[in-house]
Length: 496
Image 1 (cartoon, rainbow, N blue to C red):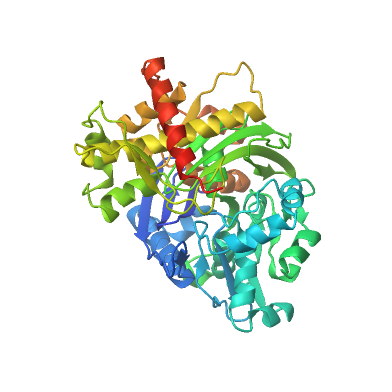
Image 2 (tube, rainbow, N blue to C red):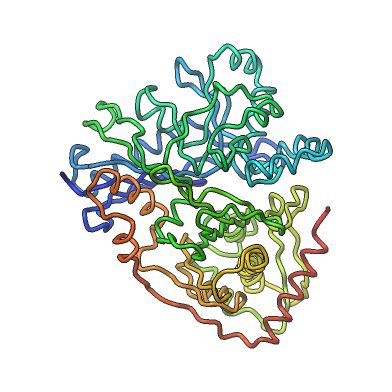
């Protein structure tokens, strides 16, 4: 059997398909951006049909670039933007509304209402999550309540709901399979991570009919086969994981205490805690890292809503850079005498603050502040937020000798300046892998190992290789002063 494995990486701003060969090297890539819709302040939507079209297009493009056919592919692995949800017609597959994106804040009032009713501890105990608009459950409830006739149709069994992976599986299999994996399910606010099943009590609280939801499978499992007419041959779908969990797998963070952080649109740091469900006392999330062969591995997660999105804001919002990759070069020329801080709360603040109403702010501006200072402030904000997460994780779970090495991936890690500043602020080594496509690689490994054409976990972990280690170089007193300024800026920004 061929060792080629196809990863569908459906992200927040673009869809990509990456074909890996039997040596786990990239053979072909297809990528397509799609439209971001902002119908109201704090609202973010995607057109599911545009996402679907982009996935089909990129799969064909990846195969073409690699000069391969669908029949050469042993399996497909899917990874996706988490928490983004779609509700669609069971008979036609047509969405009843745009997908509501993970960044969307429209359900903040519902979350406040549930917190005032004293329900957050119940949700947190069962799901490991907090009551925040970030998660999928309140988004599904909103669509059922706000789309005309949706609730009655849902109760009659005419509708289905799921995260993007579920929608893609449904479409790829021609409506034969309605499924998700444990990692995506764990981000919905209605999945009990201890019992590994949809929670009837939480579904009743949010008024979501259980029949809408997909079957929950292991991350490496049988998710059906693609329709032959899509790509020219049937391909088995054998792996699924939410993007951050897929990156954790791709980084081979299989041992308790290993930590990775992905720097894409947002930033998401996961610390493997093994079979222990660690209850955070510092407002981190407890989540499922992966589930293989029926065995669940858990993680502590810190979620930052704006990382690379701050660089996009520099480029598209205030137009101080022409290309995102220029941000590090520009930041390197900033005036060291200026202490400009950007708190990038464009869609609220995530862990460990969880302030949905906070909005972005800039502090420390002088008449001399210009593009270089803005660029440095944007990139440093990512480092500062990561430090906040790392400090919270160390308080929640004591790892080994207390020393941390952070494995990083995502678009921002290509910037050496940014990674060096990250190491400086963390006061810890930062490891950039030789293969930066870790999210897609994780999804591909799930499918490839399930198909029997890629190595098992231990040998896959041995194959992980380092591109560069960034070691802290900043003087302690400078680091301390910078962190003090950052914490003061965040305090001034918080509304709660």
